[in-house]
Image (cartoon, rainbow, N blue to C red; front, side, top):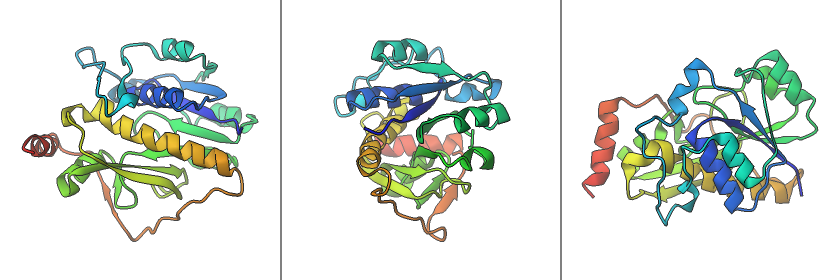
Length: 243
């Protein structure tokens, strides 16, 4: 079986991804931990957040987000190392991945941390799952816009390229609205992405390297969205509550 690595920021999304891989019997050969920076706090679980969601329709999300990331990795028996620099584009980090024998990595970085040209030019494949149905919902917090426009959420897996959210699509899916839409940020958005991640990884592993079927995006289609305003986010949540 093709070996793959997993690049993990210390976020709720990484925890749910790793739980989904474990449930899907997909074992990363190595997890590369990105140390947090001051700017990375937005993706981490707050002290007052609900940290365990037991929704039988979304078993991927049933992971205690208060459990430390390394503790979770230990419980799964995954091997891991930690980078010394929180900047994924730092030359020393680029050299690290350049020297890696693995060709495929799942990327679960901090929000807003974008892979730049030097690391994308290494000849590696970085699989990323976007929280939205591409190409129609590019950008940030797009599932809230998807709720407002279509009353559903989506996720799309791509191989990262220099143009943001415009890499070739491996898989994409729509999902019906979850029962507790107010838990979108730390649970359901990540769970939807993780479900696409598992299916995409199996597809890539089965087809590696010459049988991977991807769909090139039409850059003229779709729209790029920006971080949703709190008032509009509240409208999206209330729209779901109204049935």
